[in-house]
Length: 233
Image (cartoon, rainbow, N blue to C red; front, side):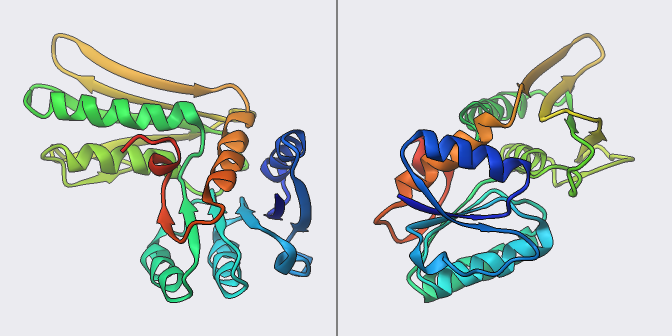
């Protein structure tokens, strides 16, 4: 499989390492200072760039008829526009706030726990997320996914970063050097607390998931998620 890497920072380099180890070829390493030359030769593109570049990268992939796997977060205000463009171009896309197998299992656990806890209003939910200082968006896309899944299963209406009211999920977003990603969901009452937590030890889990998603999307058309890739639906 020929892969175009859109974004060649730390994540891009880890994705390259894993892709090569699985027998794939890298035909483009796109940075902010380079062009899309070579994208037309790719079977699939993997985007781990920056929020300001992601939408342009995705649209260029659709226009070039290249399926795209996007792990960049911070651009979701334009997600529906990208879905519409994908359908108009008969393209293929997977967006994931997190491609790690463990995190996607954690998403399922979070949804199930939220269903259980929705019946017990003595518990108030809050979240903590910690990432490295180079992460540009806050809170993380993973934290937003977790919060939105809780909201769908409960009486909570939205998430906030501070001064949460009774119907709001508080997300405490911290940036600490050399932390790949830690997410904790906590239900507190006056008498006890219940929590679930995912801790990433390195970037390889995210990179492997993105490459597996790229392998899975070959020959498909439409908009998918890691639930489809991992058969979690």
